[in-house]
Length: 137
Image (cartoon, rainbow, N blue to C red):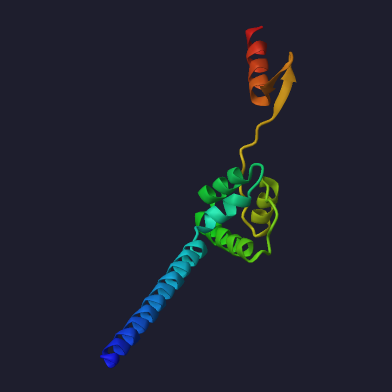
């Protein structure tokens, strides 16, 4: 009888160890899976998080004008952000300078406004109004 009770005690002890090991393995797996999700974050999203004033506008123009080249640049920038080599906000001017320094002349829509009678009017509207005023005379 004492052998049976000791055998049952050993079985219970072994079962508890096995359950403990299984729970540790599951914990490790869930931690590894969550780390994989973090590292597989979309590079574009990583970059967008640190873009400042007009940065997204420059990025979208670059993507539409130079799609293949922009993807490579986004991946490299995301890699530098993840490693901590880039830890500052990148505004539109800095991003535009970067694209131009690697030979991508990203064109931006330019609009010049002038003040007329207390309100801002685009230069093209001002010039078109002047030319129509002259033709009326």
